[in-house]
Image (cartoon, rainbow, N blue to C red; front, side, top):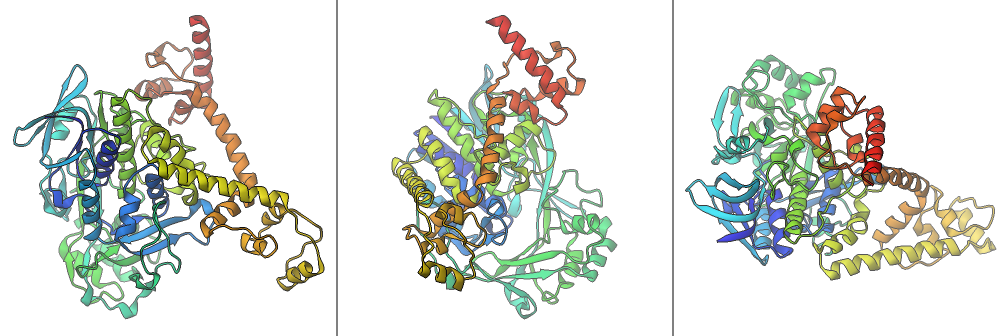
Length: 620
């Protein structure tokens, strides 16, 4: 049988890619090694986090599943950075490792046009530069018009514990032995990356009385935009905070040569922004302690996840390390920490659509592209599935700009700058983060999603209605003024608010000591808490938002200056050698993308722009 789209891998990227391709009308096949491991969470038991929580809301706004499934499957929800500005706030849910995969599988099975099959893909067949079929390990051949590889950490993966090096994927499962070699034969540059996971601790061996409780929010939240919260605040599970100490530090430094990484047993490059505990100790020797969290993995079993204590030390050293921690002196380790090495491709070999530059209709998403994290993978899978579908429908590709979404920043960073270590999304990577907030992902992205039909009309109409209501509220605030009557002055004085002249409520809301709840005492406004948040941010940060929009206009002008695919950079005089090398390798689509390439300087961009202007003039 021939499929429109085949997705290889049932992790978070694969689930999103398969679901959205099928939703958009493609006859889709999802191939996974083990159907029971679909949407597996081999590392941390959470969805979201700093920056990542915004990605989850963007996924939901674009028609993806992760936010909805997280809302059905969590037992604690927190709003991170709530005391800071709106640009860095993000949701984080402690997800149940049993419930989340089950709910995802249930959703996929309900998806029209989607079939799920167990198998290991070991080779792909390309004809005339275009994907033709896949070959499974049992030599079964399946034809496809489009292929999306979301192989996670399974490409020639090795598990590392001290000097032990064992072939296998997460949980000791089978690995894919030949696919990365066959990709290399097609011209893909393969790199070796590494990530890791900490110990799991038996619940009844933990002395929780010595640890600080970390509670969920006393306000209900959801990642998804279409459903109301379905949990009770008081039923949320506790997490716990603890720290390393001098004894922990000494144990690690005394045994550093036994670590897979520092002992020379690992060849892969690990994540800079999610390092092992030994890496933290070495890089930050001056720090007295490092923060750790104990988090329940599931309500169905009693293993707890020791967040922040990832390591590749031998088991006996891990025992000493864990027992040095306050509250874990008698802890029983049910699963030892390990590092995992795996093959990935150079993301400079893919387009902003996530289609390969080497093979037509071959897309890649997730850790195969050099990223880390469930959320980064899911965002890529969604975009790959959307673009595979649009291309088969002979429609324009869907490319999110850096000013559109964190997902746009993520993909632009990968295809423009590349990465030689597992990439993690951070708020600092987004230059327009005040516009790319967690609270406005639906307003930003659902109009775009409706154009490509990755969401329903009902979802779009709901968002449009919300935007109209927000606009109406802002109009009322601009039109109406606070009258300084004796009654109003008395009310203001009782709350120690000074207002010396009649002003519009819009002007008053700009003040840091006045919020919309205060305004409502003088000017009744009917709206929910979510809309209040939107209105307050739009009004209070108007100056910053306007400045960013002006910067975006300049950036978009550069993005509109397209670069011909067949351009020969070697012919451009006075272009620096490094710039020629990088431009030839990356083949940017526009002047804007070219300007973000490391090693291409402003002078090179000016020379390139002048050259293109002259060439266009000749052709006209």
